[in-house]
Length: 425
Image 1 (cartoon, rainbow, N blue to C red):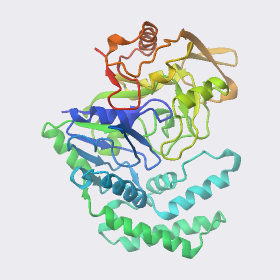
Image 2 (cartoon, rainbow, N blue to C red):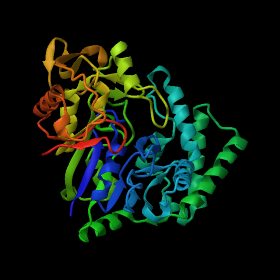
Image 3 (cartoon, rainbow, N blue to C red):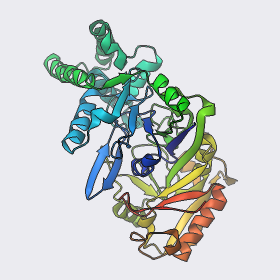
Image 4 (tube, rainbow, N blue to C red):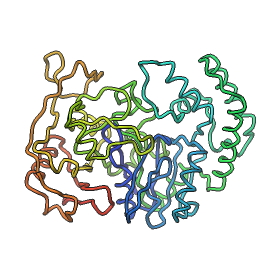
């Protein structure tokens, strides 16, 4: 058996959680492979709305195993809050969720460092969620990290050493915390560590590869999006992990030859949260209209998302980097009432037409080259099959498939899991 990978192709917020939930019944397990509680995967069904941050989006289905992989960074306090809310809603989480011992822990001082580092950047700040993800990955790469498995052996010494390093850095940044306030945060954090230890902690690489040898199927769930990848995104305005398909190998311990289908998710338009370049961003009434119709506000942070037309230069790049085999288009219904739809097919930089995603995506140097297509002016939210799609929407899909050279096999026409239409391949 091979694993299938599902990931975002834009700047995150594409709707991965909903699609994972829809696809989960076809798999024996769902495994999250990177990112931290800065993710916000929103699911809606049976009149209820759920927002997941660290827990995989496959937990609501039929008892499939859900795994938090080694590539994830975990905040014990936020994990406990998320888990207890799910348990209160009736989810038997301990029955289905397993957590890698190699997942790195976000400490209280990581969050303080995140805030201090952002403040020190001034006008050049990245626009992080402030949840300590960057400093945690920094410790991981510098070989100073604290892993979940460390809580089972000589933990007090390891924690004290990591805390001392952080406090030294905070003092240098003139951001030393109040001792009493930090002690309160630490007590809550330590209590949450004990809570996490009530779950099954596993050597996830062995568990996953054993499942594959037994012929079981696994869906790997990514967080954020390709254009936020620390290597291939719009650096330095990126997240701190590898959000691309290769991240599933390092974040779960899966060999490259075990990758099967790669599902790439994108919106029928484009959004971005926080700072950083966004060539097709709309600073006008159209951008505001897309934001309002699409309810484009961060699921975790509540931050207003920047909105713009679809960027096919960036999408082609993301498809190439990830080896995408199937495309999934989200939020098509948001554009239901537009007279015209635009798609960026190239960039103009210093008078030259560019169709490859460049090293640097500086907004003041790029002029998007658009193709304009007619809108479909039809409410698609209640449609049940591809045959009901209006002609102009079918033409939009055909245009995208031709440009992207990849089939669009699933179309979302609303937030509920039932508003998902699979197309004939």
